[in-house]
Every structure is written in C-alpha cells, then in structure tokens.
View (cartoon, rainbow, N blue to C red):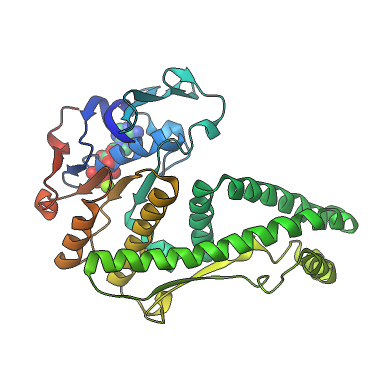
Length: 355
Ligand SMILES: Nc1ncnc2c1ncn2[C@@H]1O[C@H](COP(=O)(O)OP(=O)(O)O)[C@@H](O)[C@H]1O
Ligand SMILES: [Mg+2]
C-alpha cells in the first residue's frame, strides 16, 4: 500500500490542503515550526485512528475551529482500485470511514496500512525505562501475530482483575492463577523468540547498509523465564502470595520483563554515545520494517521525522541509500540538500505550500 493523496481540513496549521505523493520518496522540508511533523502525524493517523503526539483530538483541530478531517487515498500495487480512509472529527466525536463506510471498532482500521515511525526521541528505547521497550515489542509482535495480540489483551485484563483481588479479597486471587500462568508462559516464550530474531535482523540490515559486520544482540530478560511449566508457574504464584498481598501486585510475569540491548558485547545503555544510540534505534526500526515486509508480505510506509540528526554524513548517506530500496518513504528535513541523494521522488517546500 502507498499513500497517493492526502487532504487536510482544519488539521493543525493546515486550513485546506491536498498533496499528491510519490510512491517512492517524499521529502518534506522547511525550517522549524512550519508544519512538517504535522503532516506525518496526519498520515500516521490514517493507519490506526490515533495521533502519535496526543490522545486528545481537540488539540488537532486548527485553532478557532470546531472540526477537522483527514483523508488519505491509498493504492495497492496488486489491486487496481484505491482505498479511501477518512477521519472526520465533528461535534466532539470522531468517525473513521473506509471507502465511505463508517467502521464500528478501531480494530477494523489497524493493520490495513502499516507504518514504521522514526522519531527524534526514539533513543528513549535504548535510554528509557523497561516500559518503553516492552511497549514497543508488545505492539510490534501484535502487528505480526493476532494470536499474540489476543493473548496479550487477555493477560492484561486478567492481571488487572487479579491485582484488584489481591487488595480486596486476597483469598480468591487463586481463581486467576491457571489462566494467568498459561498466558504468561506463552507471552514470555514469544518475547524471547522475537528478541532473538530481532537481533539477527539487525545484523542483516547493518551488513547490507555498511558492508561490514556488527554484532547486535537483543536478549529478553524476565525473572519468570526459568519457570517452564504451568504447574511450576502456579506454584510460584501460590508460594509468593503473601509478598504479593503486601506489595498489592503480582510482582512477576511478562509485564515485568525487559529487553537487553548490546552490540559487540557492550551493553548499549551504559556504553553508547548519542550517535551510537541513534544508530541502534535506526537499525532497530529498519529491522522492524524488514521483518514486517518479510512476514506480512507487504511494504510498510516509512515515516522519518528529523531522525538522523546525530549521524555523520557517511552513515546518514548509507542509510538513505538503503531506504531508497524500500517502499514509500516520507522524510522531514530542515535543509533539502541534506537528503539530496533521495532524488527519485518528490520534494515539498512546506513553508511555501499554499495553506
Ligand atoms: N491545533 C493547531 N492549530 C493551528 N496550528 C497548530 C496547531 N497545533 C500546532 N500548530 C502549529 O504547528 C506548528 C508546528 O508544526 P510542526 O509540524 O511540529 O513543525 P515542524 O515539524 O516543521 O518543526 C507550530 O507553529 C504550531 O503553532
Ligand atoms: Mg518536526
């Protein structure tokens, strides 16, 4: 799928604007504050109904207006017709329409268009707390596997109920143990396998781009990992019940895991420079893209927002050269000549676009 056309109405700083995009590279350039990220935000919303910046639709409406709308017209190389996705916000409620028919649940839009989003603060994946990494992998694996998504939803719901029970009726917490154990073991096993696969993909990407070897590694770490069977998991839930009651929470399980990143045997959290962190996260995102396109047999759209700032010219140019070989790309830059190698597509001067 690629985005052929985008129309914005009263969205952020755009009153009324339509774009026709290239199915390859689209460079959005202009100085800070002209509205480059706003365009990526609108494009991203067409894939899941939500912004990556805010959960409040009111913030997306152009100041002094009451409604906004975003329309995307997508085309699939294999199918000759277009898909129109509309997001219309009016009278304080949001409507999502696919080919002019309103969808009932947000689930119906997820997965239709796949994006890989590169943001300036992606380095939080390396530097931030484990939750940032868990969220990333939870979402990524869920995109690949609907079974994983279903079990993750069930596990999260059960855990919430069990934790409430630990506070209100601790003697009844055991009723959740069997299902919790089953889901937890599945999620831990999947997280472990995907982490390994991810590391391999990162190495493949690195050698493709730089023609050199690097040893990226991602290890899943979880204190419950040595537990192998449901019976053992239930026993652990039972034998630590008093501590759980005292802590008012189920203190182990997939919700407490982490992903340990390293390359060339160095733990990247402690030893990296800012440039190395940036490189790690870029390669991670490119690995996500390659995995998605291999496994889901599709071409995710790359949305790259000011994400190559700390890299030296050689690294940036090498990555851009690789990116050119992938699907549709939207990339924001402050100076157009920074991406002059990306000339097989279109460039948009955002400041001088008719707003
Ligand atoms: N709801 C809104 N209505 C009008 N303008 C907005 C709204 N939200 C943000 N903006 C404007 O958008 C601009 C920032 O756009 P952004 O895409 O982040 O810029 P860039 O990425 O080019 O640096 C700011 O000038 C801000 O005032
Ligand atoms: Mg920006």
